[in-house]
Image (tube, rainbow, N blue to C red; front, side, top):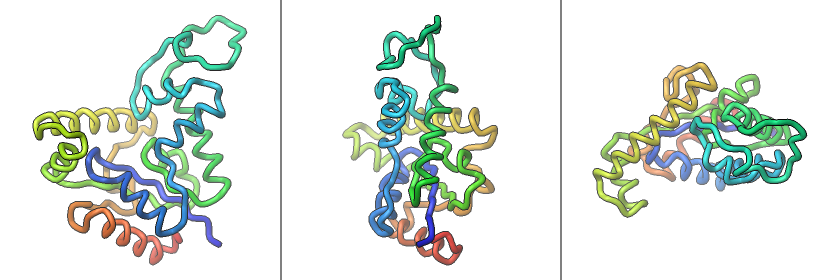
Length: 201
């Protein structure tokens, strides 16, 4: 059976994570989203909380506050986002080497750029995303819009810093799709159809 690797980037509120899950259910392939944080923590010995707080964002943390089980053996007081990105990248590559997988965000398209992958970016009009986020988070449209802008800005900064590329730039992906047109399930089906015709499945 052909190994299938799908990388899904997404604007906040576009439903990219839900679309990934729908694709995974249809194809019987595990989706790696927040599970990557757990696996990275387990394999590195760092606290899961450290990865959660640095997830797709750039910052620096006190080692003494978050370190779980490693014995440093030398004077290091901080772990930066570059070290955490390297750990997570190694986890992503090891998963991809083992078999089919769907990765959500976390620069997986860049990390696996030398492999035969399908790279997708999910977008949607701001009005659609505001409505989705406001309903999901039980907040006002104004607060939802502010959250969307902040999350997108954080993801863009993270992606551009580590990949030297441009987050959301169409030429970086095999397909960019507006999820508001077909909805979650319809978009997932369209992506699967595209993947089959492209020989990725």
